[in-house]
Length: 82
Image (cartoon, rainbow, N blue to C red; front, side, top):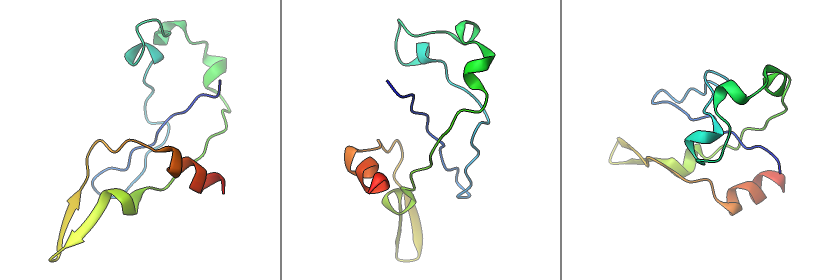
């Protein structure tokens, strides 16, 4: 199964990939903790960035509103892969 990691965009619209890691245990009680992940699994790992900026940022009346906790959809992925 491919691993999927997300690069959140901060309030300034900046993406900071690889700034931290969240252990699989955070999402799955049977997942690995950080001390169980070999460093070799974290080096030279290919990745992609799926841009959903326009889906979560909306301007109305000159004010910016941001949709928090956006969940990536199947449609987002399919749009990326074409």
